Image (cartoon, rainbow over all chains, first blue to last red):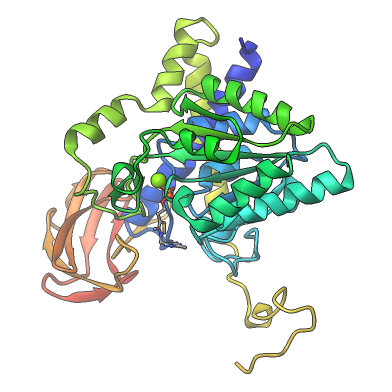
Length: 326
Length: 78
Ligand SMILES: Cc1ncc(C[n+]2csc(CCOP(=O)(O)OP(=O)(O)O)c2C)c(N)n1
Ligand SMILES: [Mg+2]
């Protein structure tokens, strides 16, 4: 499918914003400007940008700790994301949840989880709710390859297929789970082949090509929306900064990292837009400057916001708060 | 622009302190944002730390001292 120039420019703007948001965190933590813990998504932007243009606002998303790009794609304001990562009141969870716990139901982001494999069953529950309510919204669950080797993934995939639930499993295959290469954790060469075991279609796409991902997603979303059940979409990509910020990546062979960096989705899509005449160099440079400025403004807003007060401690935790002694 | 306070960065999830092992630039010298300006050691691993801003650096940290993450060790004045 060919995308309009406008859609392609939107994809690029999203990718650039995701990259700028990741780069700024990396720079700020690395130079001691601020302290925060995060799991970088640099390198995986094409997948999240494709989700950003393919999902409707009322479609729902469940993601993981490595969710900065996914959250931006789904339209969570940058201040809420950074605010949560840095423990400030304007964070999505009022600064009490941290990087791993960012949700924004208005934008359709229902859960970010740090428990590997915990997302798929929750996504299946959300899809079941939509089906029972007669809504035509779809739930997308985003996770890594490591998650597909958990029992909870198996249970979720099985039920989703059995009940033709409106869910799309998006596996961001970055070739590692923490420090372990995928080939050391599963016999299958292609994760998408797992789908056959549940009786659902499994497709494998170049996760560094946002147009390829969007095409696969559109088909999966369309099926799910029309009652034809789930799809498993494997998007092959790489994470450039390792598992967590500060990961020295000694376990990644240099030639593998070099070739992954050479396939960086952001400059690659930029070159595509120039080659096909969709945008000019000046236009794209402006998009990049706007993204950097947007990130800087969000960061400064967050840095000048307060940390949650002690009164916030048990708010949102219990329906009837038990006042913890402090 | 406001002065940039040079602080000991949290370079890895599990570290709470780091030793300042070397200053790569003398106090009073100009530094460029992104250039390595000092070295810290955490968990026996040494790492060069880049300048977070451009300007003239002045050091308050002492080489050989172990600091908590976030502790100020200098300032860069634009
Ligand atoms: C149930 C559970 N087991 C182990 C961990 C520790 N852990 C955190 S991330 C991770 C690797 C997950 O890899 P993958 O699913 O490929 O996602 P990626 O980090 O590559 O995005 C592991 C094992 C965890 N958080 N939860
Ligand atoms: Mg992985």
